[in-house]
Picture 1: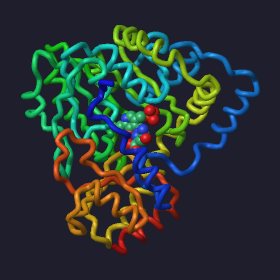
Picture 2: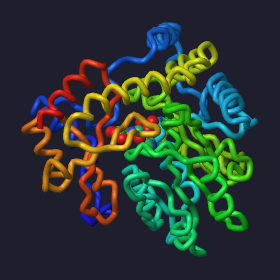
Picture 3: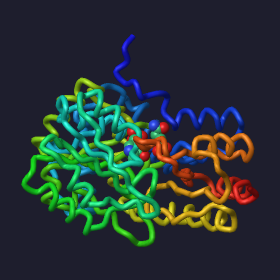
Amino acid sequence: PATKLPKVGTTIFTVMSQMAAEYKAINLSQGFPDFDGPKNLLGSVGQYISQGANQYAPMTGIPALREEIAKKVAMLYGKTVSPETEVTVTSGATEALFAAIAAVVRRDDEVIIFDPAYDSYEPAIELNGGVAVHLQLHAPAFRIDWQQLKDAITPKTRMIIINTPHNPTGSILSAEDLEQLAALVRDTDILLLGDEVYEHIVFDGHQHHSLLSHPELYQRSFVVSSFGKTYHTTGWKIGYCVAPAVLSVELRKVHQYLTFSTSTPMQFALADIMREQPSHYHELPAFYQQKRDLFNSLLAPGKFSFTPAEGTYFQLVDYSAISELNDVEFCQWLIKEVGVAAIPVSVFCNTNPEMKLIRFCFAKGDETLRNAAARLIAI
Ligand code: PMP
Ligand code: GLN
């Protein structure tokens, strides 16, 4: 049959995790922690299940969780949002991203994305009749070139997707970047989709500059986050989208027919931990910075070169001092011969450029990181 997504195969995350399992390699490819979230959070889900919180949640999310999300947004970003009309709980950030795109992208609309781009954006754009316009971020800093963005904007530009902290490069936007963005979209109808799933994983004392923190930008934004990243529960698939009421209305039209609602007991448990442990947001950066620093210091004597990630739980490394292979071949070699799995970066780029960059996930126990690094520096 004719396919609607001719360019799409199995996602690289599945391919690499399967290959890691097959060769019993240490899996630093797909991004997920190899440790559990807070014990009280896990226990509380069980309690809610035994207390009967097992039927459909309200379509937009349980009120207690939407309220906690609104409180967090006020506390961290100084933005007052209505839990009733501006917060929607979704089945992971993936659903929120898809629903936002499906809600507003029309046939032939252009959506600007920055390569290397997270792999769910383009299929979502294309399935909804839009056209992905790819702009390349360049090593080593992977900053947005604002002039290049300005030149790429056309009357057909419907949306710009901004991912900060950025997967896979680990770069973050500054307050100045948000001003540049505001200047570019002012006096246009362009909408913004902020993929901020790593909002709480920012290092070296830097701040996360959310679209929510910028009142002018927020007026045209869908801002997406994921509890999977924040509470080490990627398998729960719960995320949310905060957007002005007029945009949330449109998002919810899609959400209600895509999934309708998401897991009830987990929403109750997440609402409780948000209420009881607001300090978690301040502890998470140090927790992951220790892992980044451990991994990078162990890797430093080897032949990989890298600039420390500013955010996310990924470290990009350049292997050009090691091999002539392209990055996909190099990752296959690394699994088979070295016993460590990583993600090749060119697969996140439209043009599959010749780049010798791979991504390691350091959301792993310290022993796992030590074992992986020992193999990697022995190359
Ligand atoms: N966006 C980015 C940049 C991500 O890294 C991820 C998680 N891999 C997602 C979206 C999807 O998040 P979720 O697992 O909550 O669907
Ligand atoms: N977001 C995760 C990553 O970047 C993977 C998510 C997935 O496997 N779909 O590795």
